[in-house]
Amino acid sequence: MPTKQISSRRTKSKPARLEEAKRLAVLETYQIMDTPPESVFDDLVRLAAFICDTPISLVSLLDGQRQWFKAKTGLPGVQSTPRDIAFCDYTIQADSLYEVEDALADPLFQENELVTGEPHIRFYAGFPLITPEGQALGTICAIDQVPRRLNAAQREALRILAREVVAHLELRRMHRQLEEEKAKLEGLLRMANDAAESLYLNGGQNEIFIKQDHKLVRVKTSDIRYVEALGDYVNIYSGRERYTVYSTMKELETKLPSREFARVHRKYIVRLDRIISIESDALIVEAGRNADQGSTLLPVPIGNSFKAALLNRLNLV
Image 1 (cartoon, rainbow, N blue to C red):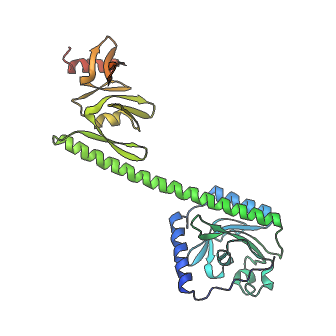
Image 2: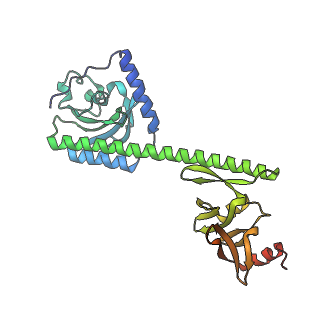
Image 3: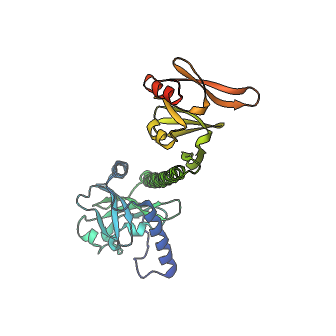
């Protein structure tokens, strides 16, 4: 395959500068530059070198000044090079394979310091890493120190590997964005509960805020009938709704008004005015109301360590 004749970098036109600004903005959203090695990218460059039968393979990302290697094999001690000597800078200007069979015979590269000096590049083949936004962030490339060319199967494999690199970059970006959203939501949840607690302490209406399906839901404590712990989660039964939240009983207990609720078992908190009767080892709690059948009653066990305090609060001792 002959070398694609893409002109060397000169002063860019205004449209080209605008496109490059867009490309760099997209690159920034991945927050990938200067991050530590990750095994998934290391594995992909090893696979590229094996398939293309080359001693060097790179996942290269280009910012405004340099090409930086997220993953590399066969190029020890080098983490980046100036962008203006990067073969990959030509690759990202197209949307297909860019191949240089013999750099010493190519006027575009024969004076390049990566050709005349270490690592003495003679052969280069790279495929651009094109994002869903259509921006080429960098390349996955195979490099050799002797002239050669890829066969059709190797070229197709490099194209597939480029898609795999982009897929993992996308997963990495989405995971980070989800973690950021989760942190924001948890911060809002803390602020909301602090505000609700402040209202309660000042005689206002008592409420708690819980996270459900990536949303904050406001729940009046006067509507809560009982709370049940299930492993790392807590079920809150309020009106006709059941909310499942990632919490502990101890944490939730601090959010409920103590004069209205009681911990009666390691797995249960009940609202005192919903207790219908007390048996020797259980409470009968009104779990809900049905228009046809009236109240729904639920037996809730009483833990021995909680029983005396509960009876005292109900003035039964």
